[in-house]
Image (cartoon, rainbow, N blue to C red):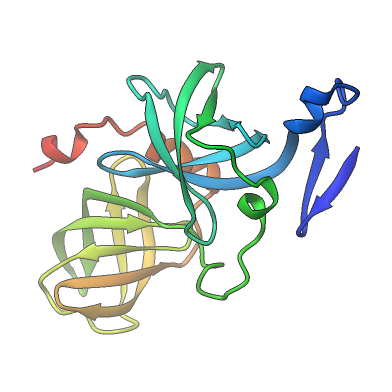
Length: 212
């Protein structure tokens, strides 16, 4: 049966709905809801596929080897801690540390700030070309639409540039802002979700140290 919970379309699994146990722990199929996993040194995207008050099944885009406990962040900024129970064929099953209210977890955020595209935290090397000069920079976060970099050189607002990121390639962007050694960039063409998800999930956990 398909139903809407606070504007999100889900399918209820009624295979064993006649039992008291099933009624107390209803499972729902979530249609393409994105979230991000908060790893120790960076974030990566995932897709919620099946959720209950006790846990969820996630589609991941890289191996989750060595991960037993992890935090997940939903649109709007709410986080939950989970324990991994299984992994196979690009999917992982997690158990929440405490039962949750499904509707509040998968509800769309209301505020404009909370609806902004999720950014992935990291500290990755990159390079930019601006005004005919090349600078080595640090990529501090990235979303489908843009990125935040660390650079001492003052960049003027609206300046066009190209940014090169290993594993993603070169992207044309404009400077949105610069202050105190950081700059915000807006890509001319957004990244594809699957591209960014796969790239972030497949980064080795020690990449930030190796890149120094």
